[in-house]
Structure formats: structure tokens, C-alpha cells
Image (cartoon, rainbow, N blue to C red; front, side, top):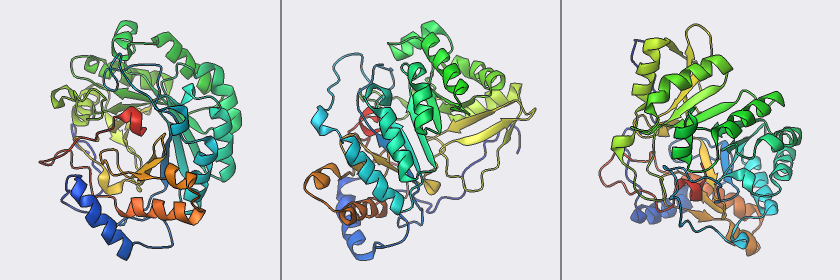
Length: 366
């Protein structure tokens, strides 16, 4: 691969993408009722088979990161609006019968909800081959051992600075030392390899790109650089603050040459690169500038029980209401199929007329 070039995804299933618009929902739903497969895997109209389910178990968080939430004024779901663990397990079990093999628990911050260890054990018992969790790690250290014992496969830890003052500025709450210690504890109990997620913000922490690359080399953790996405609750996303994945690659590659990691299926959200001298790996999640929609295999279940087939679409299919009205497992399977079949070819962030989602990341689940 030439110096300065970033490996790209396989050719998308379609070339053009259309914005997510409300009027498109009716057309796709009508189309789905006529042509949607009634058996086999969860496949959409573009041939993408869906095997990964992200499950948000709460919209609450004990931090207030500047790219996600305002410092004050957030309104959270009432407890009875959240899916119960019984409801989550049931939806996950149906999804498993349709070919879903990986689940990741998200939030909000999933570790603020009581009983998460029990939920992990229940999902493992369903038969998923990969049960992971994304966390800010402020509560991870005392829970790591029990989570591992319950069958948790791995953790992704969000940490946007390796400098205490800047960490405090971006996160507004919590402290860096707690997060660093939690990562050490997680690795000590076998939750490894650990992935460290960094949202880069121009003018805030983009000066730490090489610091994080060095951290990956010295610790063996897989540091993943994530582009700032238009999913903040404040609605203040600014493309000028986005640090493109290509720029991250070039800055690291100048100091420590990088080589692409072979990934034939290319289903993971991150483009993977290994240091040429064999000392570790980084990832680039370039959702805005290098979208990977053509290979997306993910569905999301929100904390209040709706299926979303794309982070950036407002189309939702409520399972909570159906379950509480007595829906059968076949009914649940039908909703999952309809949600997948209605998926658009791409998120269209870079297309004219893109409409940013009404719900923020903390309300959707990462």
C-alpha cells in the first residue's frame, strides 16, 4: 500500500446512496411486504447478511462527554420505558435463530444499570459466540472479574485523552486514573485484547494521535480512532472539528509505518492497521469520510425497545410495544426481518439533504 494511502472497504453494494427521509419509509415498507424473504438469514435488499446486534440497556450515563451530551438538562427514560432483561433476552434469542451471532451491550453507560452481569450470563446461554460490552470504564474495575466469569468475551473502553486535564475537559466527569486502572484490571482477568476507542475533536485532542499510537505499541491494546459524528444531543456537530481517518493514518505512518491487516469479510467497523515492526495495531472508524455502509451487518436495539437498522436513520420498529401486547416469537422475527429489509444502501451523511437523526448516540446505543 502506498505511503499515505488508507485501505478502503470492498466496493459498496450500490454506488449511489439516498438520504434517509420520512417519505421513503412508506415505500420501503410496502416493498418489504411484497418481496421480503420469510425464511433464511437476516438479509436486506442489497445482499447484506446481518449477524451483529448492538443492545443498548440504558440511555443514562455518569459522564457528560462534550461530543455526546450537554453538561446539564438531559431527560432520561423512566424505568418502565426500558426493556426488561427478560424482554432483551427474548429478542436476542429470536435474533439468534435468524443467524445473529454477536451481541454488544451499550448505553448510555451499560454498567450503570443493575444486573448487567446476569444479563451477560443469559445472553451467553442463548449461544452467542461473541458477547462484548462498550464502557467508559468508570465502574469496570470492581465488575471485571464477575463479567468475565459470566462469559463476557471482551470490552471496548472509551477514553479520549491520556492527559488528566484534557480528559476532564472532554468528559466533564470522572478521572483518567480510574479508567487506566480499569483497563489494567480488565486485562488481568482475561478481557483481552482490549480495544480503546478515541473520538477525535479538532482543537481538543487531535494533538494526542501519536500519544495514543505509542500507547497501542506499548500496551498491546488496539487503539481505534473514531471520527466525530452528527449524533450529539446538543445538535452542535461541526464538520470542521472532525479529524478524518486518512489524516490520522498519515500522521502515524510518518513516524511508525503501518500495514493493512487482512480482513477478507470486512465486517468490522474499523479499518485495521498493524505497525510494520509488529508492535501492535490501530483501527480507523471513518464513518463520515470513508463510510463502510456496503459491508454493514449491524442492527441496533434501543433501550426503549426499538430496532434501528442504521445509526443515522430515524426509522424505528418498536418491539417493546409488541411484546407487551402479547406478540409471539414469529411476530418478533417478522419485525426484525422488516427492519433489515427496509435498510437503505447507505447513511448519506455526505449527500445533499441529509437529515441528522432526531435521537442522539446515547439514546440510540453505540
